[in-house]
Length: 221
Image (cartoon, rainbow, N blue to C red; front, side, top):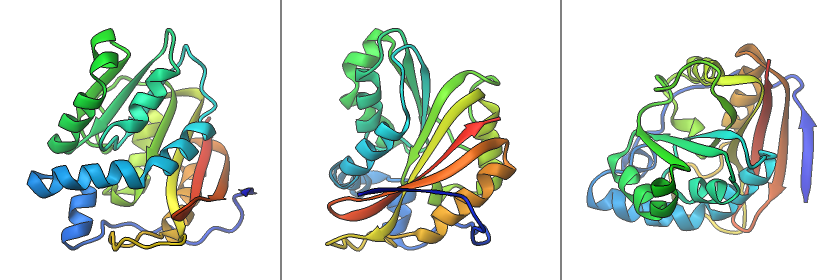
């Protein structure tokens, strides 16, 4: 069941990247283990990707940005909905860049998808060039959430929508993935959006098969 809540008295923002081998691979998959981790992510994040996609309220002529595209499945799903629009993806993992490139060969050849090895902290785009932006299970790895949200706002047009999807609670299974449920990160994103040039911030949650998903949404002011 989907529920929606306006932002009200959120907890203080938190920052920092999880530590440990598994969390390190989740933050930046690399090497042979990273390639395998990407395949696991593709399976585990499938429902989360679809949950975030529906929250974006896409039109087929829009320009979309995905931050932390991982194995590239959401990029492909967004591109499938585009007619004259396109989607750019940024990820700082060469292993994920390779997997996303393999999964999006057709859309890359058509110019509907563009991939960039880059960090959210310094996006390689001019001001006000995107109509939508999304991030699925990557916000918890942003080095400075407040600064990164301001950087994200910089590349969005006024009125653009952002959707930040996170796991807010465990479902019927846990997979030992370094803190699968992170409700404090949901509170962090919700608290920071209005301070980073966004308005009309709200949170939508839904129980999925493996987790309870939360999507923090905002409109660029």
